[in-house]
Length: 189
View 1 (spheres, helix red, strand yellow):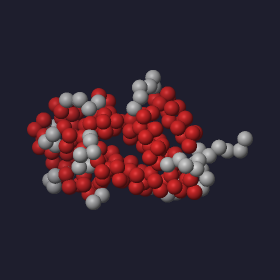
View 2 (cartoon, rainbow, N blue to C red):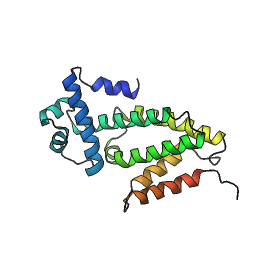
View 3 (cartoon, rainbow, N blue to C red):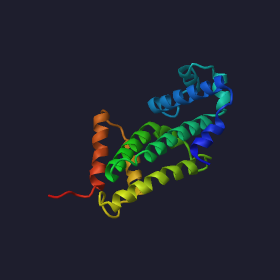
View 4 (cartoon, helix red, strand yellow):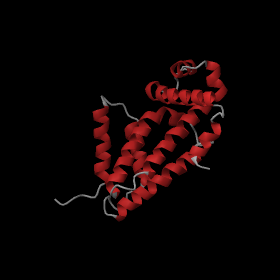
């Protein structure tokens, strides 16, 4: 089952209920990204323009809401990586890693709460690596990244880099650029 299918299985059938579900999901993603994992459920409902009862009808627990937010974000990340076939191998990998860095920065509070026992953890991880590994392999085969550089190592470094506190987004971008420069095959001197 794909992540999109898992998320679709959570969505209500009625059109108005689906709109509320999607509104809560979007509001929760923004709230968790801005305020962390402890943001109040009432605040999320207010942001979504729904009542707290509607939020809890769709997401009976904070963890259920976080899992849905994570599923939606990972599905978007995987779809982005799937659509990078038109770029050269380095550009495709770089764009995806930048998207992954942004994903980790905004989803870090959610990821820090979910554990391996979560129903979405393994399928989401598998989907991410299912996109990342071929991007890395293709770039390595093309001589665009250093031999021995593997997806898991780089993704863990990006997780660490994006979890830090920065003065501004430019500084965060420079930190990510250091990682990208470090994996790239050196050009002619």
